Image (cartoon, rainbow, N blue to C red):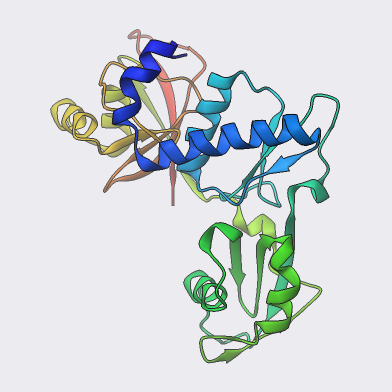
Amino acid sequence: MWSSSDRTASISDMTDEQKNADVLVRELIRLQEKRYNVCVSDFLNEGQQAYAAKELEQQGCRCHMFFGGFENAERRVLAVYPEYIIPQNDDFGITELHIRYRKNAEISHRDILGALMGLGIRREKIGDIVVQSGRATFFIKTELAQYVSSQLEKVGREGVEFSEIGADLTAAAPKLLTRGVTASSLRLDVLVGECANLSRSKAQAAVRGGLVYVNSLPVDKCDVKLSSGDKISVRGSGKFIVEFDGELSKKGKYKITISKYL
């Protein structure tokens, strides 16, 4: 955890996304302390969530939760609440909407997002969108649900109608390709090399060049030690999960399981 002096020294180096996350967290904490109730943000992407989680730790806020409407959601809202409240689904201000259309219609995630934003809805008010043949489910801030239900009639040129049944949300679980490797160290540069199939020098160049993210946060130090379950993103190579239990091979190397997002 940063000290206050570390924080002051580094504030000028913070990205806009990090500054916005810091402001958001402080405002939610302030509102929660004022209202004695659950206070919720708009939808956050994975990077914003990571920065917010770091600021929550810095502020010593333990009563918080990220939620996107279903288990595998990527875009989630942040709720901050008093310690005597256990938030329920309705407290997050998220509504799940379903639409249906012709099964052979070529409708994509981008098409639905464009149609919603075409209604004047900002991106941060829209959560995950799950598209399947002939149907889709999307999550939106509750205050906009009735407006969307009354106004969304087309996605592109395709007519749509609202339905009680939407896409299968279990299909939104990430698809992974898993393999086992051995590594001499748990250093970031070593594991980046294993994940992205790069030489040690190229892996180090990627880290130092700002091309590597760990748990959605940029990391530019090669000697950072990773923990089991950490997610590594390497620009141009993909996103990976590294898992290990400390078991060593006969040659004294760490046994690592690498899962790549497909």
